[in-house]
Image (cartoon, rainbow, N blue to C red; front, side, top):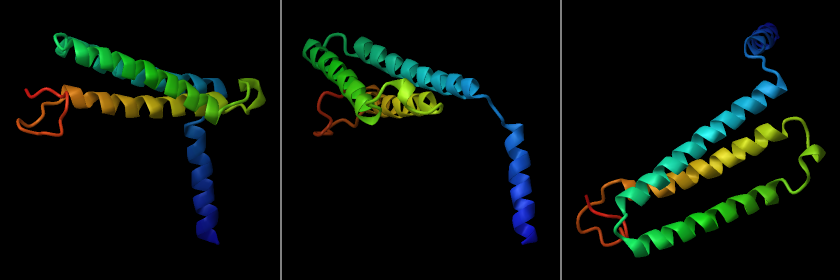
Length: 130
């Protein structure tokens, strides 16, 4: 019983050291999403630069990115179909966290085209050998 009381007290005290207002948590989560979005855009721009002579690939990349944005937006509407005001105060944190997750996943997908592939990898498709 004593261990439970001590542990509970320690957790309570430690929580005060990291206390944030709801607005601070919202802003922090939004900044993390914007950072992920910036990394996505940097990867996309680098692919455009690296593959600038492959017009068919670029046409398909741009179509894929447009469709991904539509998917992302539809995914967000599916997860949070109501107006923001109909949710709870943590909703912006949840919203930006999920947007960040989706964006980071897309960035990892795009980064495949920025990594050198093995010469002779028949499954590499449009990924250039370096």
